[in-house]
Image (tube, rainbow, N blue to C red; front, side, top):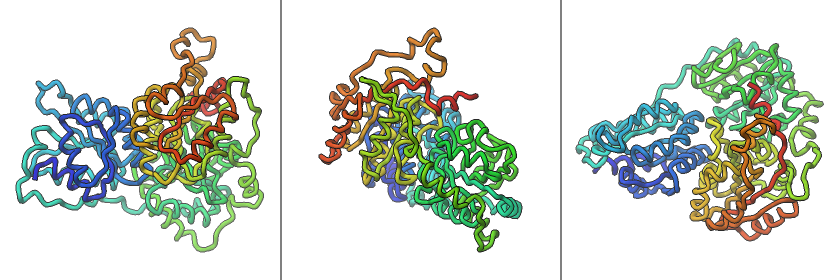
Length: 543
């Protein structure tokens, strides 16, 4: 057995079902080995798109996804997507060929680049250690939810494994943190009158949501999430949706009045706390995280607990006893949550014109048109709050938020990866015109795969975040404003359906597309009104 064959065999035997990439000479053989083992390979048009597709697939499927890359330039093309995955602790295995001859045009320090963007860097060292190396990489991805770059030197991957090293080992079990002391946590929970739990990415691990929900019931806590876990508690009457820049006015009020805030697997960064202003200075703050370096990183905490979300919540519940406390779960609070929490329950003055549609009107109308079983993926930009808060999602696997690196241009590839992970749901990708054009090459990928993907382009013909941040009278804005383009025609040229929308009436064609059982994407070029800078943008630049 050759090294590249052994790598493919190991990964597919341990559950890898999907790989993404662009095939070159360096990754040709181990990509073939993955497909021979039964994995699906998705050929992207650019390594950057492939990286984000793999990231989104891993997030929405709960599986380790593989990104297959050519050495050198193929690897560097993917780095923005790899950085996003690393910052988000996505279980992504970047399987990349490596040139180890300094005289090669493809030679770069790939290990240093991986470390520099926050990924774990490992290498297949020799035929003798190959299976141990890939087993270690897989274990770090699966058990620690990390992005791992596994470099496979070109002169190693085509060598034979020694017979005594050809057995596929089980992934090594990695050490888990010991249970944290919880007596102080129990005391804070029992004394709190208005506790709020904010649950982040760590709450999406197996059993975590149920454990936090039960602890919330015992402590009388309201349940909020960060943006990446939006939808986690949708079916709970005490859910107050997303904390941070996308929070509704009632959510802001309830969190800011909390006397105890408990963060479960959530970074408590500037987005989730509105630069700290969302959490009262008088509130006690507890942070639970598997990563000890995350405790207190963004904000000083009263109690930091190193441990898993599910394990810590279960242990705290057992200490609280069997009699639930009322806490924040009062009748009048429950009624306000039921009738006035969601953005779609709040009225607004429609600012649509004769040839431009208000992005709130666009989003709210699409929300009524689309089936409930959907996935929503968003790109970065001034527009992103509108789909994030006006398009409902069924649960935490209905929202893919690749925003840890704040890169414009990832949204379309995010939508493709999400569509492949959840083929049972209608995939929706919400983009700005800038991000759409940055990622345009992957529209061909979506059409080739015959995905029923709805691409909504919030088109204001500018990089809106910069225009609204610096102000309309600032010199140089001609560098971030552009002529209006026919994006629907571009879509049709790449094999998709295209629709230009200037009013609610134009959106009737979306219902027709849905009714026909779509087998190719529909791109809506939505000509939106300028909002002068969305509400979340004012929060974003408040630093």
